[in-house]
Image (cartoon, rainbow, N blue to C red; front, side, top):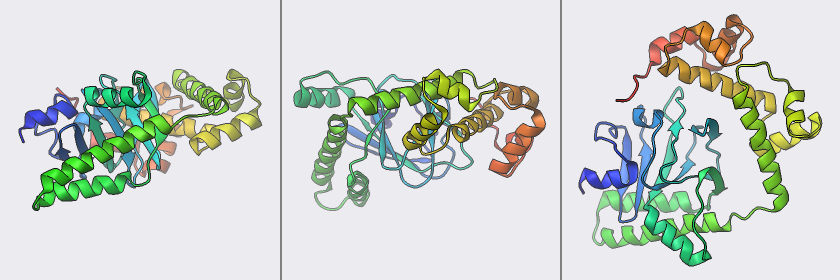
Length: 292
């Protein structure tokens, strides 16, 4: 296999970019799994030439699309279309997730054949993770690595099953209108957080913006995202601050203000509480150089 084939699924990467990523390339699918080192390429905004479908193994990770920080949810399959700009939010340790990248023409044809419709654009939407998909991926990797007699045929069969399972997830994830409405309203609330991150935001402001009572909004938000609105707001403020510390030249004071913390001392205390290190020390230890 030439490295040029890797680029069909991963974009304009180099072999050095991929030194901390295990990858397995088939006919219409590439599987990519970070193996513990820092995957710097993923930390900068980039696009892919293929559809990407990602699921978590254990740790938590975030992908940023359209200024939204999207968590990789257990049991969910994150969907991103070709040419949609995104990046992985830096964490203390490299998260272990699996990305299955599929040729766009191949997946679009399958989708059209099954539904009679054009495949939609995915910008971080979630579908239900078919329960046996991780196991199928593991079987594929085992055959790919062992290279026992007949492994090529087995890998091709497993590849087709994996793609069909992902297609089943995409087509079968039909939501009721009420559920779509709820997701839209919560998404609107999250957008409000991002657009006003540098300001003081109250729970009343968030609820009022989408026309709900505070109690109703708090319940719906937690049901949808698994955390309270203010905890989520604090989380994205700290995550943005951490990313700015890694790739931005702004001072600690500027970062504190940009991320909506009332004071530098409060920012420092919240940062230390979550990451067990001060912002300045975190920057010193983990500064990431901007990619080419």
